[in-house]
Image (cartoon, rainbow, N blue to C red; front, top):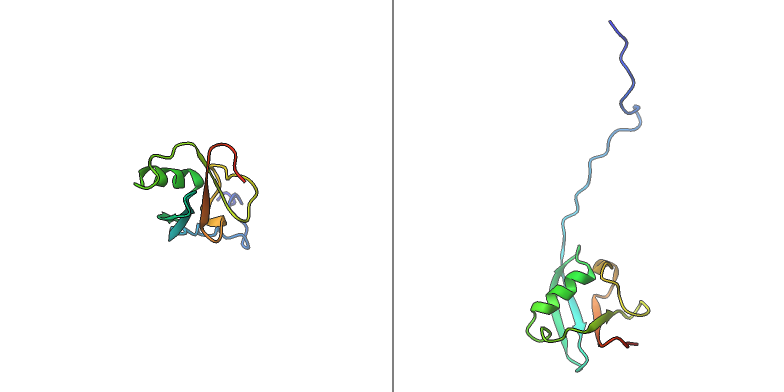
Length: 101
């Protein structure tokens, strides 16, 4: 018989199971320029681009097209690829036009 090759993992390096994390429902509050706010239902895997899509279908904000979103703990506007779950509290501010605080 031929000796077994040691192609696999060593004894101490057992393959860990991939832990799948299920998304959790979150409420995202968006403060509008007219001092009102909109509460969107999102999930923990959403990004800012997903929040923009939710705003497009919401009746109070569907007519707003040129805006940026900002957060109290981050400077400037948020990029579309930013994860929403990293922004606690889940409160965003909608800034009209290009110039924003």
